[in-house]
Length: 377
Ligand SMILES: *Cc1c(COP(=O)(O)O)cnc(C)c1O
Picture 1: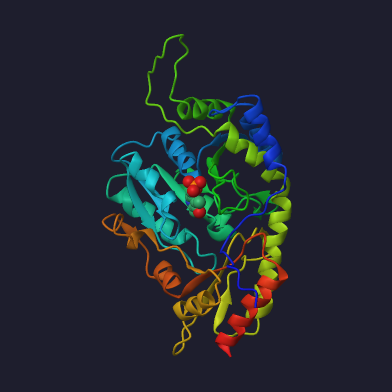
Picture 2: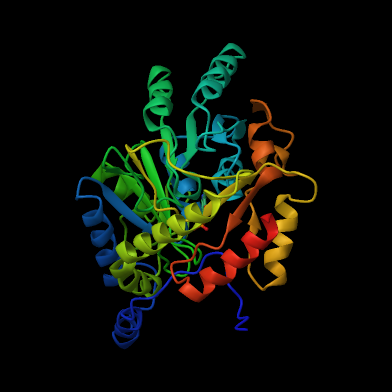
């Protein structure tokens, strides 16, 4: 039997990556910023119908950090954040010396619960501080309840940072995720739907904010022949080599989305037949997901639980991962306020991420299907 390892999330290459990287090397553009970075930004802006301004950075985490800085978040300020997410959504709040206020998920999308969000905002205002920003996440590529979340944000006039790191290609009412917030952020980390090896982007609707983001990401150099700085700077700009990889990768974005969606329909076929398992889906036809990762929720019975399924797959050299452990349960964050119940915690207890890479073959899928069907029969 072919027993090569099946990974959780690998992306496929277009074959053009090397050309762009080669050109950067030949022209000696081996630095942060450069022609590949400019071109990559234009390509992403094209993808967003040229309605937004994109700043290419060295990670999605840097993009969230710059969004907080551009919103004026400072030491002691409070920032609301979806608890069920990867730690990179929340860490930049601490970089600013601000206080994260975590909010529970709702079970439909696993994302920030709009009504718990409102409860949290009201209570924080009552306690004396209006939160400075909301970080909402399209987890695993499934959009959060866009209208509901933004209605709450709008009502209390709090800007939203839309963490679209996992959702490039997902849409709501035909509009791309990443464009609903005051700021949107993307990630091009190695496991995301397209990669620059490490990279990210900040999306805004203002040229001025883009210019300011570039300024901060390039050490906040004032206009002067000597090195002069009036503000704290960061070394966050994307490298010209990484952007070369990105220029190759953007050519396969649509293919990767299609491949990941095919994975989803493959899993749907399997889990339609298994009553104790729910495969995560979008709410309705107004939502479209890139299905970056497929996740399932297993109602445990006897020894049929998420950990045993993970072990059964691992036994066949198939990688699976538990879903993100909520931030309010993390040792580093547990002392911060949390609003909600046990929805995120329950998702963590019973949820599992299944192999969803853009490069899964039919053979891989047959191996996965066999283990899952054996496990539940
Ligand atoms: C990957 C990811 C990030 C951070 O992106 P990096 O490019 O790895 O810094 C942020 N939020 C979420 C939800 C992510 O999955």
